[in-house]
Length: 207
Image (cartoon, rainbow, N blue to C red; front, side, top):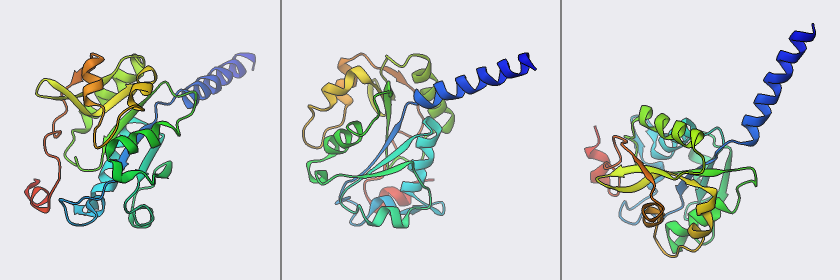
């Protein structure tokens, strides 16, 4: 009985440790989709919206998935088939991607050692590669990781906590690519990163 209780205690402690050290994931879905002409996040591909695909990708990275909304904030939660951990609206969405990053980071708990960032318009991302990104961040949470865009880092990416103050200084429609490069982010090959959807023609061309 004592041994059994000890085993259960260790399991409970391990579960509590994992719960408090989860690396959250942000899905950036606040933009106006001007080039797309309508709500890109709700455009359907393979019987699911792009937003649902992105939430599914984020779940491969983290159990704590937070979707940043803006331009169509009230609409996305109503139309989404997948349910994230939380919906976070930002009034500053006209300022671009930097506003979404700031909104997301400012909601993260003090226990978070880093955060993953996923976009809403990359439905072809390889799931196994996302698993490698997740595993790398979990093993070395103080190191930045990013998808490899032909020699430069980009999203999806993992931003360790020490990099957040620099992210919070970003302005306009800029992501963290340059910060990741300056920080020496380790690049991970993720098939599908180049197939982003900006226009209806891009969506129609996906296979």
